[in-house]
Image 1 (cartoon, rainbow, N blue to C red):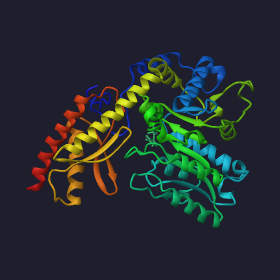
Image 2 (image 1 turned 135 degrees about the horizontal axis):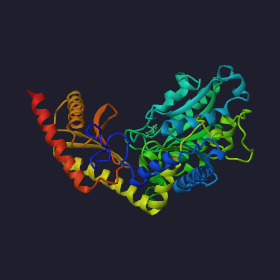
Image 3 (image 1 turned 30 degrees about the vertical axis):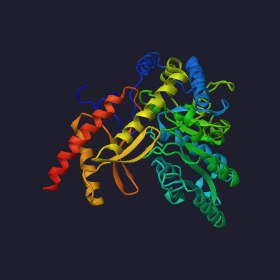
Image 4 (image 1 turned 90 degrees about the vertical axis):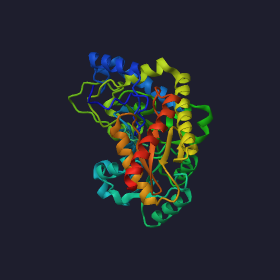
Length: 411
Ligand SMILES: *Cc1c(COP(=O)(O)O)cnc(C)c1O
């Protein structure tokens, strides 16, 4: 205990790691005790049903058709990989499974904004497309993908004989929480017959809050969506979810029938929907939290996190020694900015060093974002324990430590 980071603390706002919901902690204990293997229905009859229902609830929860199917995985990376592989099966030339990517007649290309999470790099390296296949589309001043440049790039690639396999929209980017224009990406994906994937690992649960719903317009057109219950649904690690509009694409990608499996054709065997074979009962902690907290409870808690991030942004904006940079969803980015006329280089060094002081200080935990060249402190509040009092105390701590550091650096 003494040597842990203790990220359930009300002033923990680093990266995107939540305070764990107590019912989820109990659920993991219970799941480990029963120990069902949720790879096959015959090994986990009730756990399989609970996972199926959890997936359906998550789909309804974020406002897409309950006909979406999918699978629970360890986190956002794995959920995105699952969608990516389904896209590869669906959009690559026929025979990809037999002949492999190197024999695809056209180069398969991938489109995402330059703020997209690093999972894309892992995916193209691991799944044979290579990093040259990624078109990092520049983002605008709000960190959203430039749709005009997306279309321009696709047209050029088509002329060069490429197959635009997948377009990835981000719903809540890691650094600033901004949501791409999903409706426009859906339109472009249809036009070019590409797979439309949404990386909503962090942000998609905000779609349940009525006043933010419009931000996510277009989500119902996604061929696949990644979301992370271990982020904004406060599930203890690990829990991610891949949702796929037509779950048959998952079976086409992952299913196999070795003779040593005595499973009935009518069974819902999760090993046929994803990368894992033996699987734990991670659905229980997500399912129990959904039952305990419900849509209203989540709406309230998520909304509160967003309000607190806005409060932090405003407090930074109004403080004479700070500057607020961005606020979207529950992420606020800001800088310690002790006086005017300091160089950008100095401000970057000051804030980077301040971050290290704060992280080692043990009073609060924030992380960093580099936004258009500016090194910022960044707080992501996915924490039902954080209160207004914490926000005000944080500002005091940051300014106190910032002042000390600035005075020592000036000498
Ligand atoms: C966190 C995150 C990921 C990676 O998810 P893990 O659960 O850490 O694997 C991917 N994309 C986005 C947008 C994220 O916020």
